[in-house]
Length: 511
Image (cartoon, rainbow, N blue to C red):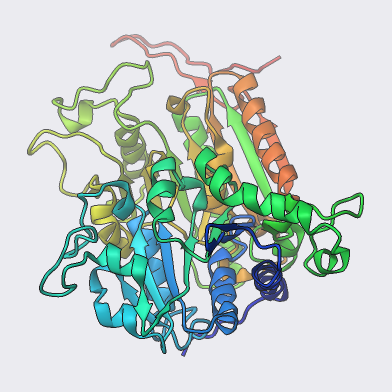
């Protein structure tokens, strides 16, 4: 049986969403468009690792009591891997299954008219947003916009969802959008056809399309102004501004305190940044020295897991900015993923079966060594990648969503990524704390980044962007940074054959 219990702050966030819905839906001034009421909206803003999924699951479960018939929950995310993981977590025996107990959980391809018409059982439909990006796109065996005479009569599944009749009633429908920052104008237009009762969007950072803001957010803001005399209710749902008056922006945003997330030990307490303008090998050596220290601390405490490292780089662009020639033999390739792979295997002794390259790395037929684990099909081979449980993952930014492993402690970011490294987009991949508990050692309570850059200003800009992001999120995570330039590297002179000369090491930073 699953052994998951909501943290107090998670339960409080879910209750806030539901209380706000009850206030809005039951208010005499609730805005409408013709005879139909405008939808409720709530953005769940939280640090990566705060547990947005169980909060939203708890919210939709509690919202059931506010409807006259059981609702349909349309749960979406951009990445297939995220949808698959959520489906697994909600299904019988899954991590969050007890939260959504009583719901019928299905993928969109499993949808039938019976599911829609059965108003006695709450229904949760899982789908990727790709389903809504193209009218001709199908998910599995189902084309949601195509009329299906055999199964859906003269209607398409989409039309039946719009009608969603149960007897003489129309079933309530809530749209839950995980990673809601991916919401687009096109999705906004198509989803509005469903005329949902509520939108619940989750993201650490959220920028909404203009049309969504106009059709959904603006009516709520106008309502808040008209209902502003109801100070007591706005206070009850924590939506009063600093001046003591109702604040519409606060009302539409449930913000989870980052301090509570850190205190609950769900994420690491600190981030250590080490920067260098030196060679790639220098930075990778530093990372692996740190990795060995972390391994030793984990082993000493008998924690029973192996720390993982990620390596972020451009895929087919060499250090000099030139495109890598994929027709060359493997040993002559200059693509950063191959250079990193070779260094890990040849110099650090990492077994190839512990390393994955998750990127669209080009090869001619027959010139990829069999021991190289390449995942180049995006979401189509993501499950195979996950099953490999690799300890070293080389990728470009394509792995940001859908990959989540609290055992990830270290990250190398290559200068091939350019001046706009955007480290703040990657920190979420290494921020979760293994076992959701802090230990008695700072090394294993911290995330460790190693940045190889062209100059110190790029390093400083990257660190400042991370600090600004964490400050905006109110996260009490300590930032420690160290820039060593090329310190510690030694330049070897290559002797000509037959010469016998004593060789000295010249340290670049020597005084």
